Length: 112
Image 1: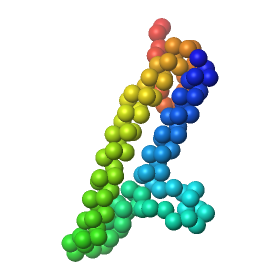
Image 2 (image 1 turned 90 degrees about the vertical axis):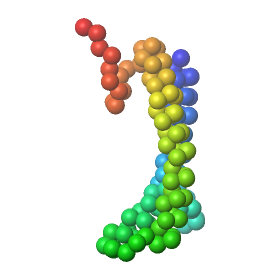
Image 3 (image 1 turned 90 degrees about the horizontal axis):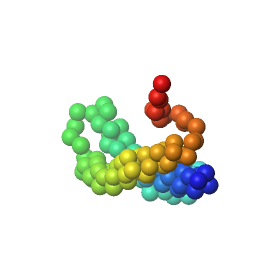
């Protein structure tokens, strides 16, 4: 059971990394000077910082960045929910059933 659980854990970690890249951008690629598309956070930050000290209306670019970020965020959030509520929960339950030790972030099942 342990090798199968470890493989599933690595798959979940890989999917989480993909979601992090979608949200925050590919830092590895950017660190090598390669062009990267704007991440969701980049687009939202552009809108926020464009309004920080301004009383003017949002520009067309700000509106467009918000629209794009909203479109990109919806599937990322759906994938994250599925990953946490379904895949990770199932993995944790199987790990508990296999006698794996408690891991941080989980509420232990305690019986006196």
